[in-house]
Image 1 (cartoon, rainbow, N blue to C red):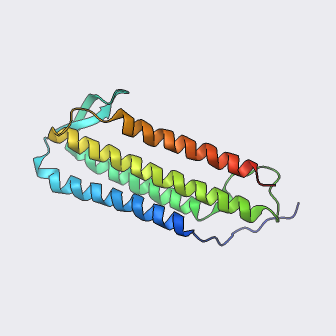
Image 2 (cartoon, helix red, strand yellow; image 1 turned 180 degrees about the vertical axis):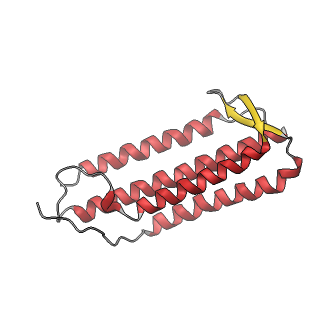
Image 3 (cartoon, rainbow, N blue to C red; image 1 turned 45 degrees about the horizontal axis):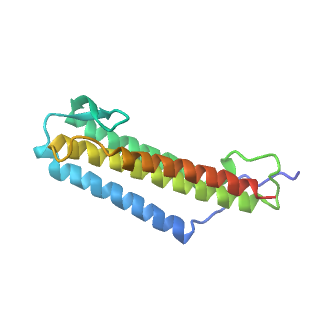
Length: 166
Protein backbone atom coordinates (compact mmCIF):
# COMPACT_ATOMS: atom_id res chain seq x y z
CA UNK A 1 0.00 0.00 0.00
CA UNK A 2 1.27 3.46 -0.89
CA UNK A 3 1.59 6.17 1.73
CA UNK A 4 -1.46 8.43 1.66
CA UNK A 5 -1.11 12.22 1.61
CA UNK A 6 -0.84 13.93 5.01
CA UNK A 7 -3.50 16.52 4.20
CA UNK A 8 -6.22 16.28 1.62
CA UNK A 9 -8.08 19.32 0.35
CA UNK A 10 -11.77 18.61 0.61
CA UNK A 11 -14.70 20.85 -0.09
CA UNK A 12 -18.10 20.81 1.52
CA UNK A 13 -20.96 19.84 -0.72
CA UNK A 14 -23.90 22.18 -1.14
CA UNK A 15 -25.99 19.84 1.01
CA UNK A 16 -23.38 20.01 3.80
CA UNK A 17 -23.35 23.81 3.65
CA UNK A 18 -27.17 23.92 3.79
CA UNK A 19 -27.15 21.54 6.79
CA UNK A 20 -24.57 23.77 8.51
CA UNK A 21 -26.66 26.87 7.82
CA UNK A 22 -29.85 25.32 9.19
CA UNK A 23 -28.26 23.88 12.33
CA UNK A 24 -26.24 26.97 13.18
CA UNK A 25 -29.18 29.24 12.32
CA UNK A 26 -31.52 27.37 14.66
CA UNK A 27 -28.85 27.30 17.36
CA UNK A 28 -28.34 31.08 17.11
CA UNK A 29 -32.12 31.62 17.15
CA UNK A 30 -32.40 29.62 20.39
CA UNK A 31 -29.59 31.67 21.94
CA UNK A 32 -31.42 34.89 21.02
CA UNK A 33 -34.65 33.41 22.43
CA UNK A 34 -32.81 32.68 25.68
CA UNK A 35 -31.41 36.22 25.86
CA UNK A 36 -34.81 37.76 25.13
CA UNK A 37 -36.44 35.66 27.87
CA UNK A 38 -33.58 36.08 30.38
CA UNK A 39 -35.32 38.61 32.66
CA UNK A 40 -38.51 36.54 32.79
CA UNK A 41 -36.68 33.35 33.77
CA UNK A 42 -36.76 32.36 37.43
CA UNK A 43 -33.47 32.07 39.31
CA UNK A 44 -33.86 28.26 39.29
CA UNK A 45 -34.40 26.49 35.96
CA UNK A 46 -34.47 22.80 35.00
CA UNK A 47 -30.99 21.37 34.50
CA UNK A 48 -31.87 17.70 34.10
CA UNK A 49 -34.77 15.70 32.73
CA UNK A 50 -35.52 12.01 33.25
CA UNK A 51 -36.29 9.52 30.47
CA UNK A 52 -39.94 10.62 30.45
CA UNK A 53 -38.90 14.24 29.91
CA UNK A 54 -39.87 15.27 33.44
CA UNK A 55 -37.69 17.69 35.37
CA UNK A 56 -35.73 15.94 38.10
CA UNK A 57 -33.19 18.60 39.01
CA UNK A 58 -33.02 22.39 39.09
CA UNK A 59 -30.10 24.80 39.09
CA UNK A 60 -29.19 28.41 38.57
CA UNK A 61 -30.37 30.05 35.37
CA UNK A 62 -26.70 30.84 34.73
CA UNK A 63 -26.38 27.20 33.65
CA UNK A 64 -28.10 28.37 30.46
CA UNK A 65 -24.78 29.96 29.51
CA UNK A 66 -23.02 26.62 29.85
CA UNK A 67 -25.06 24.83 27.17
CA UNK A 68 -24.09 27.30 24.40
CA UNK A 69 -20.44 27.26 25.50
CA UNK A 70 -20.35 23.46 25.33
CA UNK A 71 -22.17 23.60 21.99
CA UNK A 72 -19.71 26.07 20.48
CA UNK A 73 -16.78 23.96 21.68
CA UNK A 74 -18.37 20.82 20.24
CA UNK A 75 -19.12 22.62 16.97
CA UNK A 76 -15.53 23.87 16.67
CA UNK A 77 -14.05 20.44 17.42
CA UNK A 78 -16.32 18.56 15.01
CA UNK A 79 -15.86 21.21 12.31
CA UNK A 80 -12.08 20.86 12.67
CA UNK A 81 -12.24 17.09 12.27
CA UNK A 82 -14.71 17.43 9.40
CA UNK A 83 -12.09 19.49 7.56
CA UNK A 84 -9.45 16.78 8.15
CA UNK A 85 -10.98 13.48 6.97
CA UNK A 86 -7.47 12.05 6.53
CA UNK A 87 -7.29 11.86 10.35
CA UNK A 88 -10.42 9.71 10.67
CA UNK A 89 -10.28 6.02 11.42
CA UNK A 90 -10.49 3.86 8.29
CA UNK A 91 -10.37 0.15 7.52
CA UNK A 92 -7.12 -1.41 6.34
CA UNK A 93 -8.42 -1.55 2.77
CA UNK A 94 -7.91 2.24 2.44
CA UNK A 95 -5.57 2.99 -0.47
CA UNK A 96 -4.76 5.75 -2.97
CA UNK A 97 -7.58 4.65 -5.28
CA UNK A 98 -10.42 4.61 -2.74
CA UNK A 99 -9.17 7.31 -0.34
CA UNK A 100 -11.19 10.14 -1.98
CA UNK A 101 -14.43 8.15 -1.60
CA UNK A 102 -13.60 7.24 2.01
CA UNK A 103 -12.70 10.83 2.82
CA UNK A 104 -15.86 12.23 1.24
CA UNK A 105 -18.05 9.65 2.96
CA UNK A 106 -16.44 10.25 6.33
CA UNK A 107 -16.64 14.01 5.94
CA UNK A 108 -20.35 13.83 5.11
CA UNK A 109 -21.03 11.52 8.04
CA UNK A 110 -19.24 13.85 10.43
CA UNK A 111 -21.15 16.82 9.00
CA UNK A 112 -24.47 15.12 9.75
CA UNK A 113 -23.41 14.09 13.26
CA UNK A 114 -22.09 17.61 13.97
CA UNK A 115 -25.29 19.28 12.83
CA UNK A 116 -27.56 16.84 14.64
CA UNK A 117 -25.49 17.38 17.80
CA UNK A 118 -25.93 21.15 17.50
CA UNK A 119 -29.66 20.73 16.89
CA UNK A 120 -29.90 18.48 19.95
CA UNK A 121 -28.10 21.04 22.12
CA UNK A 122 -30.32 23.83 20.77
CA UNK A 123 -33.41 21.75 21.52
CA UNK A 124 -32.24 21.11 25.10
CA UNK A 125 -31.61 24.83 25.61
CA UNK A 126 -35.01 25.72 24.17
CA UNK A 127 -36.80 23.22 26.42
CA UNK A 128 -34.95 24.42 29.53
CA UNK A 129 -36.12 27.97 28.82
CA UNK A 130 -39.69 26.90 27.99
CA UNK A 131 -40.04 24.77 31.10
CA UNK A 132 -38.36 27.45 33.20
CA UNK A 133 -40.90 29.99 31.97
CA UNK A 134 -43.78 27.62 32.72
CA UNK A 135 -44.78 27.24 29.04
CA UNK A 136 -44.35 23.50 29.38
CA UNK A 137 -43.88 21.10 32.28
CA UNK A 138 -41.65 18.54 30.54
CA UNK A 139 -39.30 18.01 27.63
CA UNK A 140 -40.83 16.15 24.72
CA UNK A 141 -39.37 12.66 24.85
CA UNK A 142 -40.52 12.17 21.27
CA UNK A 143 -38.50 15.05 19.86
CA UNK A 144 -35.45 14.33 22.02
CA UNK A 145 -35.67 10.59 21.29
CA UNK A 146 -36.29 11.29 17.61
CA UNK A 147 -33.14 13.40 17.34
CA UNK A 148 -31.10 10.71 19.09
CA UNK A 149 -32.60 7.99 16.90
CA UNK A 150 -31.90 10.04 13.78
CA UNK A 151 -28.28 10.42 14.87
CA UNK A 152 -27.94 6.65 15.34
CA UNK A 153 -29.57 6.01 11.95
CA UNK A 154 -27.20 8.49 10.26
CA UNK A 155 -24.19 6.79 11.85
CA UNK A 156 -25.37 3.33 10.81
CA UNK A 157 -25.99 4.54 7.26
CA UNK A 158 -22.49 6.09 7.20
CA UNK A 159 -20.89 2.83 8.28
CA UNK A 160 -22.90 0.86 5.72
CA UNK A 161 -21.90 3.35 3.00
CA UNK A 162 -18.22 2.97 3.89
CA UNK A 163 -18.51 -0.83 3.88
CA UNK A 164 -19.54 -0.61 0.21
CA UNK A 165 -16.33 1.20 -0.75
CA UNK A 166 -13.81 -1.11 -2.36
